[in-house]
Image (cartoon, rainbow, N blue to C red; front, side):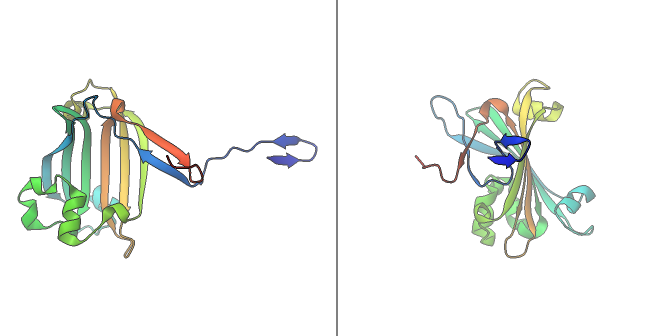
Length: 184
């Protein structure tokens, strides 16, 4: 509550910069089938706009890894990951399936525990374009959640991953609670 003399008493309800507990809820089918991942593409690239977003010099490169998450045969999430080449094992990259779980592979190969590293993520609702709708097997302009996440290494500040994901909105659910709310 904020009181201003001559103006009144106001209730402030600011949510900016408030520490909260966040849970990304996995919304799967009623019979709780396991999700699976297909690696659609794994290739080395050096597009200047992505190099810049990764904080890499113009002469460097990164790997583009496109993956599709499915429940049964139904795709629900498309991941487009950009990872600096120095973090990718070229021998492992010969078989794209080695990167069906990027975090698991980087943990085993490079001893990087990306789940514990600092990140920022922004989620927005957009309409699917032709490529996204084709991959997710949905109508063009169907709403999807665009998730842009950048992970850095706490030791060096280097960007280790930029991932742009597209999730069907019927598979998206988030829960927020204040840090002082009792966990169930």
